[in-house]
Each structure stands twice: as structure tokens, then as C-alpha cells.
Length: 487
Image (cartoon, rainbow, N blue to C red; front, top):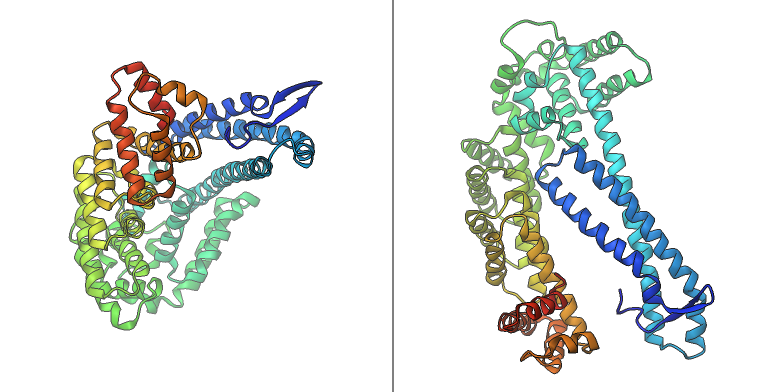
């Protein structure tokens, strides 16, 4: 930001000051809040349901909104003065455009923060609402979440019990239980309305009566589900004695049920459905629960409609092996992330999966798989090859899992700062270079190469790192490191 409004002065309370200086406090506050917010979000990656961390995130977002609003107010207050300076020729057209961009950037940043906070509050409300619906369902049926383990899968059951389930997962749980109970999509809406009616004053007994009505309605079409080998009274009635719902549902995952689910949830040609079914059954043998296997296979076929069934089946088999080999990996998420890695780094599916597996084998944190595609794409566009991206991330593993974001953020920030030096080296940088073998002219050459990207850009970044490592004075080396990489 400093570079955008450099050289612009304004008058505040009768005193002339640089606009950059006038915004110094809000910018420092913004940097401090951003840094703390990153730490909180990193913690939430490891522990999404951490109540204290969620409260801190909400507080920090609120403070960042207040701070960004103050900054925007100051920029708006200076707008007329800056426009007059431009019209009078006191600042260049480039400076004026940069000032306008700064206002637009700040407005968008403010809107983004407000949306982030709004989404967070909405998610909290949705989680609370869905949790109440589940509690109502369990109270009305006399069941607990453990009774539905066969339908929900262990991962979803554990998320619900630990309080870390998202609103989407809770809605998914209600839908799965409802489908097992009622067998028809339309009835799920009626089920949820019945569960929500408690918020409007209905008693648990009234909800129980409504559920029985739904059971009777669904019973008229129960013949459609004879292949499932599960009686509806065992799910909704809550009164039946016997072997337990989990065992019944586990037995129900037979041929007819799997085929029905594929018919409903897969948008694939008839000729592909047999391959899909075989893939689901095949990878279930690796220890994945049926629902997880089904969803992962559905995601793979949806993302790769133009790929042959044989190639998709081979890929999900390899992905299933990897997901079961490392703790903390969600099979469906692995499918999604590997596809994104392939797209961002220009790799085949097999190549992307191999790269991901190699990083995991090195100790790459499974919960941070998303940053492989995110930062890998940025590095690829900067001129790094897929092999170089892998080497950079493997080096990051050695510094500890929490440092991988720092490493890649630093590399990203370094590219931005180096590119700025391509426009000219300022006085502070020139002074910092004194006593080293690095010249301002060389820094500018590197900066231009980085700005242009490609192989020359990646080589320039490598040369910068090498040159820094050869600075003998540790204090000087650290000072230059901050100027180049922002940390």
C-alpha cells in the first residue's frame, strides 16, 4: 500500500502531512490484526470446533472491520484534496490512479471482511438450528447418534459427538437419517419442518405424532425399499426392541440399495454405472465406510466426466489406499484436492496423486492439503516447475507443520516485493545493501525478471536467496531478508 500513495500530501487540522503517514496507525493496526487472525485460522485448521478460537476470530474480524472503516473514512476525507492536486498538476496521473485504486482496494477489503463475519455468524446460527433439530429427532425417537452410526459413518458420528460438525454435516446427518427412515426425498422436507416446529412451541410429543404420520405415509411406498431389508418402524418409532439400528443399516448396504443411491446421486451414463458400483465396492474393502466411498467416487466421476471409467476407477483405488495410510485424511477431500493440484500444476491425475503422496510420506500435514494447490498454482505461474514446487514444500516440512504456511507466504510476499524493486530501488533498500556484494542495479534486474514471471523469474528468486545466504553479517542478512521476503 505504501508504494501506491507515496508522495501524496494532505492537510489535516491545518497541518500538512504525507497521506502515507496519516494512515500509518491504521495500517499498523491492520497488519497486527491480520497476523493474529492468521494464527487463529491456523489453529482452526487443526481444531475446527475450538470455541475459544472461533470467538477470537469473530472478535478479530469485528476489530478489523472497524479499523478498515477508519482507513476508508480517512481516504474518503482526503479524496477532494488529492483530486485537486491532480487537476493542478501537483501529483502525476499515475499517483492519482494509484490513490483511486487504494480506495477501491480498501472498499473491497471492507466488504470481504463484512461478508466473512456475516458468513461466520450465519454458520453459527445454522449449526445451532441443525443441532436443535437433531436433538429433537433423538428425543422424539428415543435414539442417540450412536444408533445411526451405520447410516452416518464413523467420521460424521464423531464430528457430531465432539461438537465439531459444520451445519452442512449436521444437515447431511438429518438427511441420511431421514432417507433411511422415510425413503423419499420429498419427505425429508416434511421431517425437517416437523423438527423445526419445536422452535414455534410444539412439544416433543407433537413432533413424535408428526413423525408417526410421516412413517405411515412412507409405509404406503415401502415396497419400493424391500431390498433394503430394514423396517421403517425400527428407525422412527423409537419403541421397537431388537438388534439395533446400526446392525440393520449395515446389513442394508446390499446390491439394491447401492444401485438406488447411484441412480439418485450420480450423473453418469447407464454404461458407467456398473463401473461406479464396482469401484465403490472395491475401495470399501480398504476400510472406508460405504457412504464415504460412495461420495468420494461420485466426486471423482463428476470432476472427470471426459475420463474413461477405467482411469477413474484406478485413480479412486489409489486414493483410497493413500487416505487409509495416513491419519486425518478425508477420502472425498483428497479426491478434490488432488484434482485441483493437477489443474493448478499442469499434472496428470496420477502425477498429482503421486506428488501428494510423496509430500505426505515426507510428513506434510494432511489437514493442510489445500495449500498444495493454492500455493503450487502461484509458484507455477511464477515459473517454477512441479518438481521445484514439490522440493520447496518438502523443505517446508522440515521446519515443522505450522511453518509451511509461513514459508509459502514468505515466498509469495517475496515475489511481490521483488517485483516492486523492478520499478526502482528506494533509498532505504540502497542503504541496506551497503557493505554487501549485492548492488541496487542487480536488485532491479532481479525485480524485473520476477515481475515478468516464467523460468527467468523463478531463477531470479533462487539467485536472491543464494545472494542473501552469502551475506556474512547476520544482522545485515536478516534486515535484507525482511525487505525481500517481508519476514
